[in-house]
Image (cartoon, rainbow, N blue to C red; front, side, top):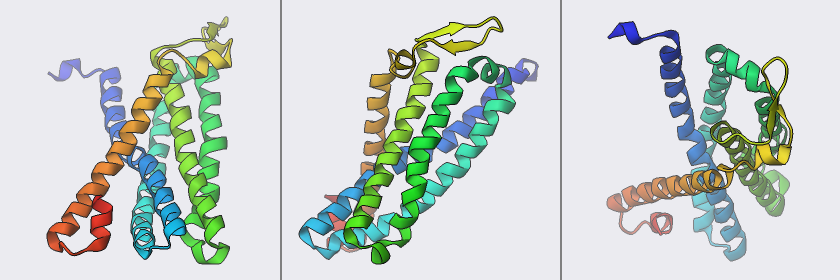
Length: 223
């Protein structure tokens, strides 16, 4: 049995564990960030404290999920080079800039407003804090946009050529980013993230209702 475990198979097994563990957190944080924006928006519109209580409750969970996603993502990024060094060398001129765009646009947007979102509700005012929450939600969506663009290009490559060294080079960034499978992969991922959040929030609300059927916060959460 172990005769078939060549380095490529072992690299695939290791990377499968890494990416499977990492994926748990972005798939939840994308939907949860939007859910937090909805909760805060409802609180500002209606003034009902139940929405603010829910926002505070899920904000703590979002902070942990976001941090775990960043940490596990760093490990995954290292494995691009350690496990797939040849592929990274050949496809780097295409994949590298897309990953950089994700960092420069989405991650910096999230990181820049995350501190305000977590600790600034009293300090910066209600409207500015809501804006920060919206920016974090937008940042998570933009992260999904760029990462799904890279992933889709690896499945249905387009807009590229080959140089003398055998590397992929970009001939059309538009074709690279919006490759044939990108639109439905993005829709699939975002909907899956929202469904994941809905199931988790619903499950937590159901658990609280089982313990106390008069819990109004849990009723709103479950609804």
